[in-house]
Length: 293
Image (cartoon, rainbow, N blue to C red; front, side, top):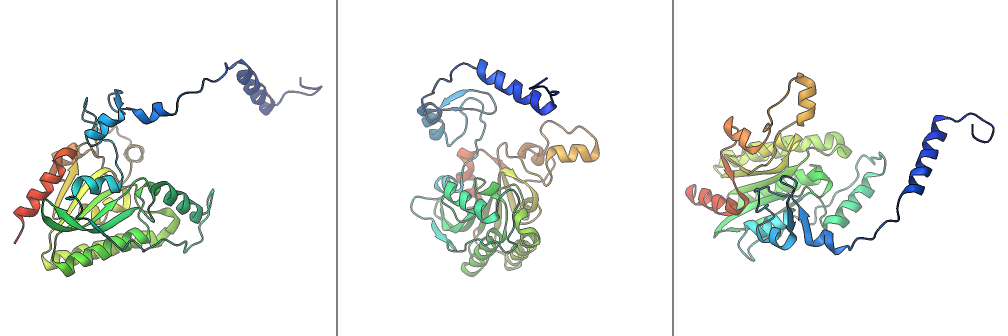
């Protein structure tokens, strides 16, 4: 009984919560710098000094696990110093459907932009890789999960058209959870638009290379992500259309432990090259030189 009435289930949970809070010891404040100085590897649980991890290009020196990196870091690692020139930076997102779920789409865009200093989930531009000029689109998973909306599709298509105009190879570096649901069919249309742009490159004989990084899923995999003349996958990257759990529930079978990894895709003939991050620039440069007219 509580105050002369029967205890409800909600009363019971609130009482338990109060008891647990009262029994909890005083919290000890942890130095904020600890999280900045040390990083735990998701694969082998090794505690790594952040500076050492950065020196290894965000790859665990103990087990070789490749941490996710953002688009600007990827550009820094791939391109020759001072050669990358960003293009189509001013193409900005809107809210054509005035979409609202737990919060408005505009608010989500503002938060993502503040956290990443980007206006959407891709950076496009031209630059040189060991002296070879390329057009490039580099996706950033930190911006709304690298989801592909109308801006991402437009910038990638515009970059492919620029490659066609300049007659230089096009490289797309993918990192995405798929199409952006807040734009509904407008997002899905980007799959067709980018695929048509790839077809134009193919007709003109312009080399198109895709670099699949962790994770690459959904509409990006189903469109320009897997249409490359040569498909490179970063070591350990997970690539697929639907997620592992969805597939298992659909087919009611247990999938192999390495399912949808770069190594699994290589074994089944779906990618051409697997490259460690430390070897990615060299591998890309070799392919560019090999196909140079």
